[in-house]
Length: 146
Image 1 (cartoon, rainbow, N blue to C red):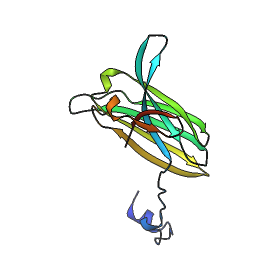
Image 2: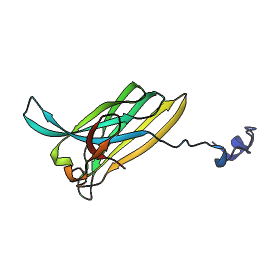
Image 3: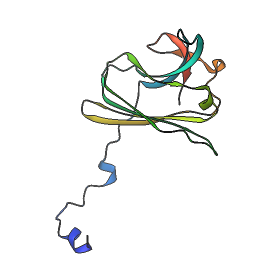
Image 4: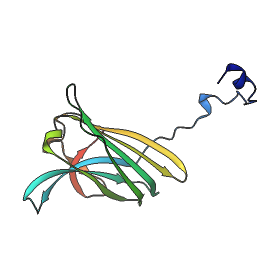
């Protein structure tokens, strides 16, 4: 497209970046919880999304990946149609081989037709029982992503 095309569009140029509202994510957490697996008789780390807010999260999209200087995992994509208020849902199992990596979870969702987005991080080697804290809504202990 040429410059002349853009000039003839008659688009108001008073729309600037300060007019874009970027909502702040609050009361939504990503946590890793160590749980006993009955099938394999092992303790495993599972990642959950928690909605501690008063509104349901709609059309939740989650992209997870892990990486460091030399390795990168495959991107995993998950979705939830609805996550009710004061509830949680399991995202995925974390294999021990990805715990030494930086693990990222990008969460996008809608509340009342407004889009929210945040990237959560578990730094390398941080998912250990010594870092466990009390987790809201789940009433258990686990490691919270930042």
